Length: 78
Image (cartoon, rainbow, N blue to C red):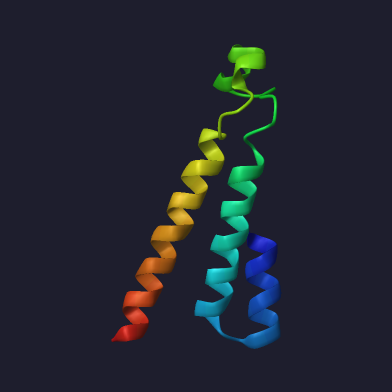
C-alpha cells in the first residue's frame, strides 16, 4: 500500500488518487493473507486452523487506510 501510494503520488501529484490506489493495494494485501499459515503473533497458536482467515493486522491496516481515504474525500468536497 505504501509503495502504491508513493508511486501514484510521484507520477500524478494527486494525493486523493494516490490514496485510492494505496487502499486498493491494501485490500489486495489483506485478501492475500487468507490462504497463508500464520507463523507469528497470536494467530500462530492456531497452526493449520489459521489458514482461510484474514490476518487481523492486515484487516485493521485496511480499515485505517479506508478511513483515511474517506476523510480525504470529504475534505476534498469542501
